[in-house]
Length: 497
Image (cartoon, rainbow, N blue to C red):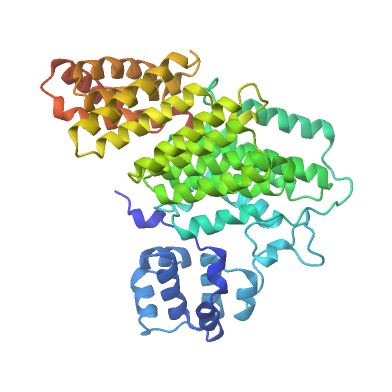
């Protein structure tokens, strides 16, 4: 069994390096103080710090306790590289800049954005995409998986930079990338966009990551500003697809990295693409909800709502964001706030009927809203001590999910599977085990053709909750079938291998 700490990688937010105590530690060349501050503000373990800077954990412990000093320039270089230290801070230590100039450039005259250490610059975004895709393609997944998600202020303060205007991209004149080749790249990205609907078993994750890697190489060469902007749109889309695939496979740390890169890339593409970034924020909020971080999801949903309202988003987009907000409230047990958000979402969805939507928002309709709302009513039911209230919420859950199933298009197989499993879980709350077994059997039949990690995780939730009804023949039969088939197989979907 591998050591989970070996796959842990630090993610240090940029504001950390501006803290007075951090600057003081660097001025004093006190690596022990620096490590203690990393642990204090970033929640990093000694093992994680050691892995990042290539030191054994006992060595890190001695340094942090002051029993051992670090003076060699080469050792400081390793620390700076491992912690992702910005170049301004590296210069305080007498170290060379970590990043070379970005030939694509941005509007900062005479200085590369990469040298600034600005996470949201065009240069840094391209370089980070190139780095993560290279490691991904080399199967160095231990370098991607951080061991745990970035949560709390370290995440939300980073995402808040989305609300700031980008510096822009310098026009470098005519570049080597022609219009015909650029159109082929965009067409290939469009073909990959609906991986989960049409080619689920035919598209391997490596194909998406490989395409993203190649586009990042093109973006590192001097191109005209319009071409650079289109390349950033492509990188944003491919990063989002890679994130979605990682999310479906249950690899949340890697999914989070790709989602954040998608947001950073679309940030550079111009204000006309702001709504695409709103969709990425909605996906990040959903991931936070799936990983039981509702407060972060609520903060991110509000960032998305602020951006959507500032850029005149269609009511349907606002309705989708209100469901994320309501989901957050439901996960925190805030019933009144949840019902208020649901009412707002339903009104906005009705208001937006017939309006043109961005491509990524076209899947949000009455069926999707009903499925999400129904699942959240089940969550609220499970949190009720009063039997009558519990049954009331569970009946609302069943009504909404049944409506979702009635409205779903036949080709939306994964969504139907989610609805069926959700309804099966609700039937357990309603003490209707035979109905629960019936609908979950349907969901399992769909999943056999899908290979979705997310659907299997929901089936496992039902399997666990149905244990209380294991004496019921119908439930026992379905649980036995699941344990011997879908839940016994490897959880990673075929296309992510």
